[in-house]
Image 1 (spheres, rainbow, N blue to C red):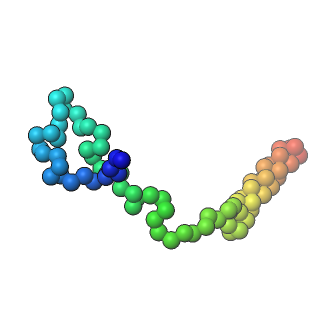
Image 2: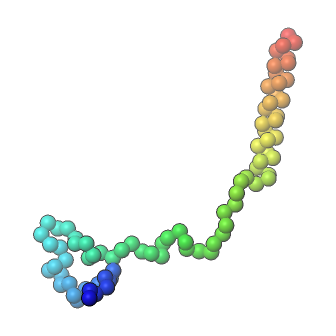
Image 3: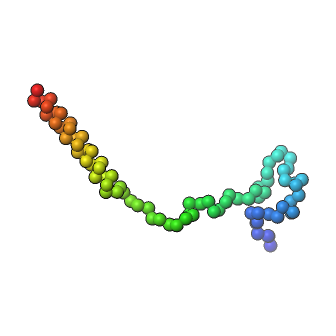
Length: 81
């Protein structure tokens, strides 16, 4: 039976002379895994909102309509002259 893998081994089991083998690389399992507490699941759950709010959408349509009316009036003025 094998022992379970420990991501944070006891430093007394690995003397300092064994930290870096020839070549200067760190062996697999010598460094702990990345922190698990920094995932996206931290904090309270807030469901995502879908779509635009009513205010910005109305403002956007008002600007579009005003621009269309301006160019329509400009085209009529050019056609009359």
